[in-house]
Image (cartoon, rainbow, N blue to C red; front, side, top):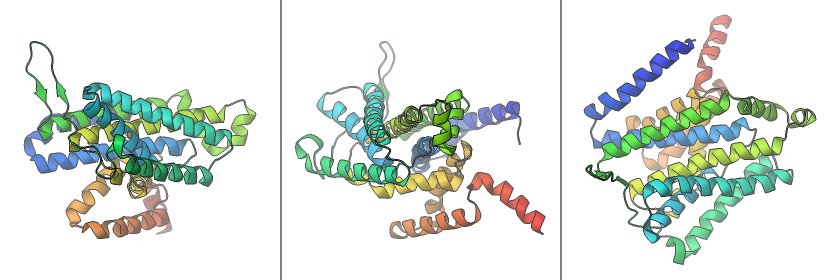
Length: 321
């Protein structure tokens, strides 16, 4: 285990590598892959926070879609800047999550019932944006979403057409997500979430408002999903209802579970490896779910704690030998 000092040094080294060397060595194709990895890391970290609250969100992709549609409609219909659309998308996703989480948990809908509720909400969201053609464009979606740009009087305009600028923005969003999640986990809020996850009844017996903590965790996790949705809407220049399905949420869950939810590093490893895997193996798109399903089965069987539990598993094997 590394000391806190060496962890900081390692983090600074990795950040310098990502900021300076990587953009110089990679072309647009690999920069695009790194951008996708960054988005998947944010999604995996955000869904992990909801895991820590003891609930399972099977509709996480819908909140990503809420952020995407909020940002795209504000930019195309109202002509607002991306830098205003992005935080608004996060706020709208968080508000919707707060309402759903509060109503569900207040009605004692928890565990698998909560997961089913979020799944139903995700399907309802997909149907609404598909059928409401006047607002959302229906099955076609929202097209011509403008790219971000930075304009400071007296300085040249920074255009986000090149992938390199998107890469730096994605890196900034990952760093923000990591800092927020780390601060939450190592705060009193994080300790309370751990207690709530282990036992609702015992937590309530010591005057902990379990509903409040679960709703806050749910809202924060969904807010970061909204941020990713907003970013990708402006990165791909369009939004489609077919991008926010159960299939997408299952990938997010797999990233977190494969890496391991026991630490912040787990979802990062999981999202990175499973995003790169199809590229290295050249898996056909139709076979990708089957391969990922097999990986999930092996992970649950051999590594219930994910990749971060590999050291513990190897120690057990060596002891048996």
